[in-house]
Image (cartoon, rainbow, N blue to C red; front, side):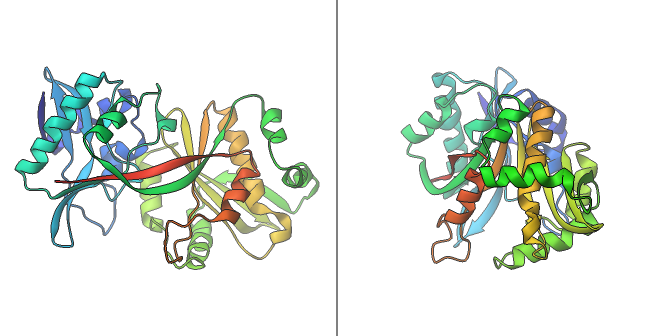
Length: 324
């Protein structure tokens, strides 16, 4: 095996491997890792080859944290870690052996990354995770994250939803002033997003310009659902198509002006219906934490319950680290 640093000359073969891999997704493509406006990263992504063919990728950036040189899961992406095919244990162990050797040689003091959850895998395989644990990579952060399985018929999906929310959904056609619409009206949506995030003391991950740029870079993979009452926007859900298995409910936001209309619930149901009809297997409903709590990993019980009302189940999202 060989390991070396990514350069722009490798873009085509990098993206081709992501597309054909077992766990590659939207966040691993080079266009996604470089779309940011006004934010720059010292990219230090790695390619690992066996017999001159790519066997693994590691999207990452070089950062200095508390005076230490860190190989960090790419800060511009939700998921990082290793992108691989289905691995045998021998290859997994050898990948980590040369990966650690590379990092030591280049005087990295720490390795930190957020691996892609198994939900995204074409074929269930935890070989690499075992190899990581055996080599003393530690889980240093854990988040509760929800997902909705889209199996069965559309009626099956509806019947898994809480009875009260089901009632709002069934009443939607009876309200001529309320409508849901898939469109590209980011200018209408973004102020709602900013106001929602401000209530929790945070800013959106993406600027308005970045969302528009992503929509252009990945046509058809960003889908915006808007909710209107009397032709005024009162909410919206922005979904990212991660790969051919998973859609991410990235931002589900509502205006506080009409809570009695339950726009958040209607938006989630329409997203479920759309993703099911498009043949996806899962909706990634995201993490449920309290960012303003003393411990920002504290679970938000009310948000978890809201998600469970749509038949969601919970998984662990983690961040891993090793000191060298």
